[in-house]
Length: 407
Ligand SMILES: [Zn+2]
Image (cartoon, rainbow, N blue to C red; front, side):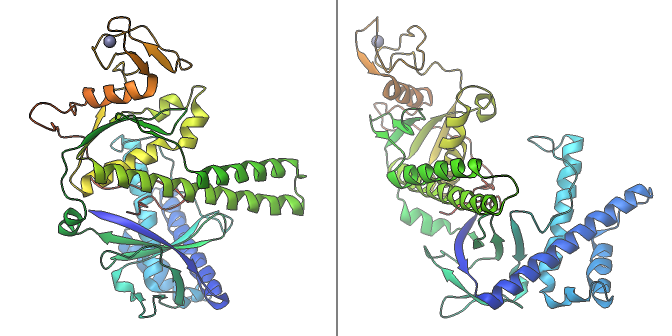
């Protein structure tokens, strides 16, 4: 299984200049590829192949006065940029044909230097390395200072350098996980749990635990709100507005980071303590149209669930998702009788059949666990195979590359 590990980078002045140049060159090659494709389409000619584009837009272009500066950056960065353009077209055509899942996507567009997020990728053959003193040595850029927030479990196969909307730099390493080491880290257990993702709490567990978002996240959210209010009061086009916008971008990045950290902590804890985990399937797209929209997006349930998914796969746990139409909030978890509808403001209710008083969310969490077939039976924990993703996918935090899940 492949995972991404991201770390903050602190380039010095010279490295900043070299990185800006590399981002710029990668962008130019990408845009030249988009234009070459577009020209071929207009002239009703076949699309140039990847090999032809590489020759024309990189090798030959370097010899022309207009593009000679392409020689000042790593050739791998340029090649990878071409590949990104190819992938973008492949996804676009797959989307047209309907063979690609998800929302329709448009044709690739030219990138701008004003884009909030810039990135370049170095593959294994790009001669990048991690120096003995722990710096990231990049070809034609130099040895950049890294803030190692955790240790890499193995040698990375590639690294992407990203500049985000808040002007921060990150290195995102691709790592192949080691199944034996993972198993040693999280031995099997016979415990199982059901999770109800609530609105008053971030999550409620079938054992009665209620989990709120941590204070560091709430504080970051408060700061973001304040920054957004300040921005809205600034005059359009003013220099103060530009400053306020950067402040919002920074506050936003802090919230995203804090939320991701919280999701990582909680998902790792749940996966480590339980062999089987049950959650309700979420239709974020469906909910987003309702009044609950804001809290759904803010709570970032989908990204939390995707973390549970890849961690379950990584550590040999079972994650079961139950259908949304199971009446988890109005079924009595004690006697199984389905009671009347329970509007969102009902926090506690008494079962008419057996008289047990239920906390709405805990009762729902127990029902999630039961519906998933995870209830502990006489013979011990009963687990059934769940839905597992093929690979952890770009969950897009940071305004980050997709595959960015840090274990
Ligand atoms: Zn009952």
